[in-house]
Image 1 (cartoon, rainbow, N blue to C red):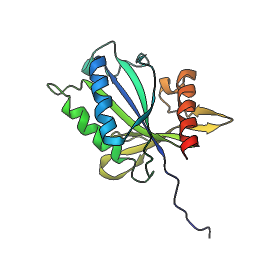
Image 2 (cartoon, one colour):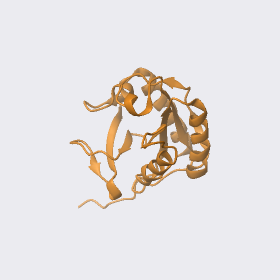
Image 3 (cartoon, rainbow, N blue to C red):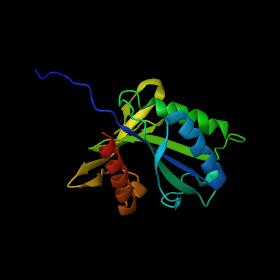
Image 4 (tube, helix red, strand yellow):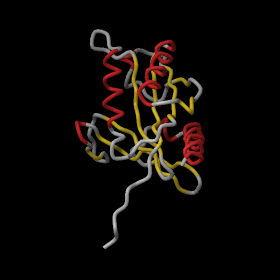
Length: 172
């Protein structure tokens, strides 16, 4: 029998999207107080790969990704979703979110995202959170699974996560 080991710490990655760029900025400052210094900030991108959020949040959504320099244990990383859900709720008006905040983590072999929705490929975590491996690292690049969201399958996102991975590797 092989002896178990404690996994390496992971890098928190958070996606934020909203119609309101100033709310994205405000959210980033709050996230930095919660999770530590931001060491990666993507450009602000159009969020156009799905219309899923349009009824709740409107059209013309903008998205940004942040990486945080404070390492997390993978066993407790799901707690980031609990914290971001509370923050989303703080900015909700009349039951509609103004900002969507999706945390996950990156390590040398994968990108894991957290959700409150179960599905066949998601693993239950404590307190109603589910985890999914969204991308896997192989052949010197991030690769999608059949269930990977369309935007996460793009070269633009793969290159961005490679940049975040390089920051993670330098700090590991």
